[in-house]
Image (cartoon, rainbow over the protein chains, first blue to last red):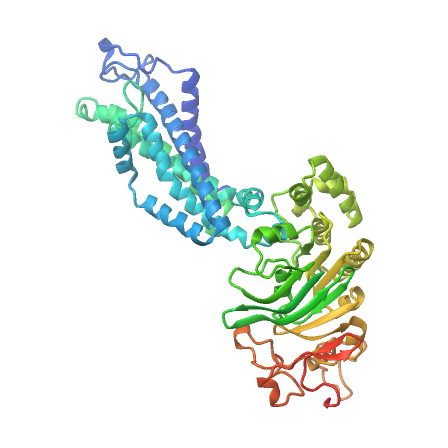
Length: 272
Length: 323
């Protein structure tokens, strides 16, 4: 067995940390994440509050854990939603070819040209700011990414002998896409999904920071950051903790995705 | 049953197949031989309706009297597997590495004949037995990497037979296999064709395999069918200079490695290589490499001449004119 690449190992550890905290928050947090206690505000770290409390006396650890859960759910739903649509479009483009392929890919280019934040601000302006709209916006920007990756990998698989054999056996393009193309490009899609997961976490944090994502009192790293911003001189640690969490989550998924790519596609492994 | 009339496949100015005439009837066993680039595989793909999208097709391709020359992909999907099936050169590459071979073989039955999974499994099982795969029950559940090359080719043959095709095209089915296994696969194909009354098109550059497997033979060069006849006659008494060259290039296992002067004897070859499709000679495709060439060859395409007894050859120097 080959040694696992370092980026994969570090990524896996960081991801386990974040996902573990998020999963744990489903059943247990040290305190109720949203429970305020004004008398205890700005409490220093203690056995009671491991990382202290914020300006409203809420327990920071509990908030960070709840925020991890929200962040993971947003990223998961957004990537699944955008990924499925994107993969379907990419497979379709590759299977049919011709003007359909050109059309889908030009639409994807159009999607790429659209900044996610701008799109989310637009959604928020029309439908009001909410976590749902943030999810939709992040899902939307994922569609062209997955469409492009899928179409590229699928086009390679379409030239292989076993696809010719399937055609010779009278399979139609959709059956071939489902049974032969998709399983053989799954690795590339999973790698992309992991990396897009990191992007989605960052986007959610950014949107919540701007007030376009999670609405109070729902916990969110981005919102914790924006609330702590005004208190930077008074309690800088309140900005540092959620910032660190974002870094750990984004770095973790990014490294994990890179590592998975190195493992599944040896051609892309860079000399180190 | 399958009929090509003046069938041409070209890519812009490059002609991969020039005015091919061919009839395949039930039970025929036809060998197609020629060097790489002679249009053998192109011919096979055209018979499957799988010519590359960029190819322009001319002439006529009929299956049971239906014109399929410009048929849609959907129309071809109905033909494939049930009327015509194909096995490919590389058994290593022609099986999806992520699917159990049983699922691969069952798929066309489920799609084309709407068999239930249990029925399909039963038929796959009996096909595996028919093509000589030992322990078929266990094999059905295995993945391609767990099988040897010969076994994979047998799986591909089972896949091609899944819906009882009338015509089986084998495109160099034995090239990637070692000699022993190749022999057995060749015999298997002949047995299956005979038992099922199925037509077989056997594409190869192995003349010994053709002699063993087929009744009729087509010799191809540069997209032309240069000679056609019964396998026995063509191999015994070739009429076209290219066929002669091809037969002359077989290594003679009884020959001494050195001649009487002690010089190392060279294997006989046809001088030169097949020119690329876009720079083929206008007349006879073999012009430029032909040992008996006359000026007319480079400019005029020799018409196929009937030599009697189903023998046809396309050369300006046949009969009486033979040097």
